[in-house]
Length: 394
Image 1: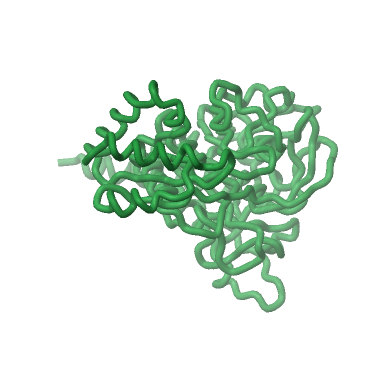
Image 2: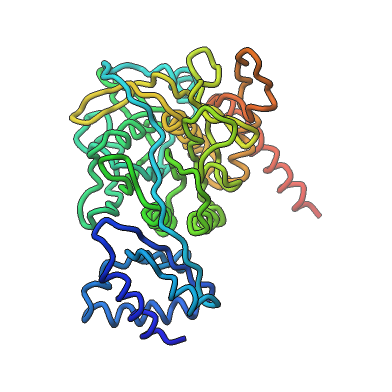
């Protein structure tokens, strides 16, 4: 392959691309050809500043390029790489209202306080791919690691939207008597800022975020966002995380339809829908057999910007409850695979209440229950321990 010609062709595309125009994901099929292209890019970008706009994901052997066309490349290098549009995706939340600090109803609904005598999520590392987090919030300051800001490298992943801070609060707030409590108050969060102030991100930003989580050995990834379209690059990196033993918990979307958004639709993720205080599936929540579990997602109070609190609704909020419950279990069972975690979440979920005309089979999973999850996890550990002992005899 002519790697100089490859980058020269891309340079022409980049030079005419609008500042905020379309982007492309270029994924190499062969690891050696990717390594050679990467080496040539590193040597050329010192002399060609335009090439510094290119970003790289070693995990899926991809380059993310600001270019509108790339048809010439596709024709010339079709046997070497695949090219797809770098699509936009959105966070899964609905407008909410400011509220006072309290023990959120959702934390109580999944029986997290009863589970804290067994686990508080200590030492579990959660990657929160979102809009960042408010590092000054008193209920979060002891729960936040440095994470990464993919939009402004070298800066803290500070939240300029609020959505990421709300998710972080449900996951791990530890405000004692004067603030709110999250589901897993002793877990540790690593904000991965991939979304801008409008709650929008490119697929490439999500790929880079998951890539970072895998490289930094994160235990769980919360992804409260989605899009309607499949992406090969996104699925590839989800598979990489899955095979690395990292569970991805993803929101299904707020269209109120059967079906839902990606990445929740991928079988390697844990797909989450939303329920209300009556344990009925929320009218806005997507639903269907692919939903693994439902979490509290309607009128959920949590942390907000400028050390405040806000009530919000959406499958985003439901997802953070389920991720928190998963963190409680992983603190006790750190060796659980994503598949085992998914099966335990499904098996221990309580039945949701049906609305008029609904059939249970059309909804998918039940409502998350942290206490039942921990009890089942402890039982399965004892059973696997007995099998190991019996298998070692003789």
